[in-house]
Length: 61
Image 1 (cartoon, rainbow, N blue to C red):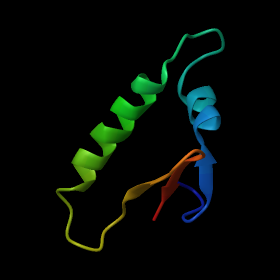
Image 2 (image 1 turned 30 degrees about the horizontal axis):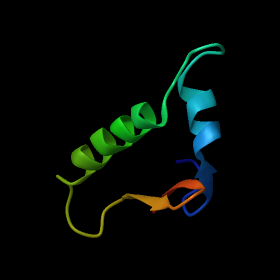
Image 3 (image 1 turned 180 degrees about the vertical axis):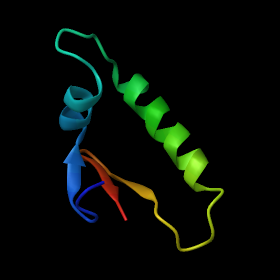
């Protein structure tokens, strides 16, 4: 989030969100991103959003 428009790889998000040795499936990360998107949906149109970059990760716009 500190650099809007920069793609963050899924692996980097998992490393930042869970301690070493934690077993995190792709579905776990997807669930957290969905929760963030749901919270952002309550903001006015044109507000911040999380977009998926297929095969890479996510980008904050």
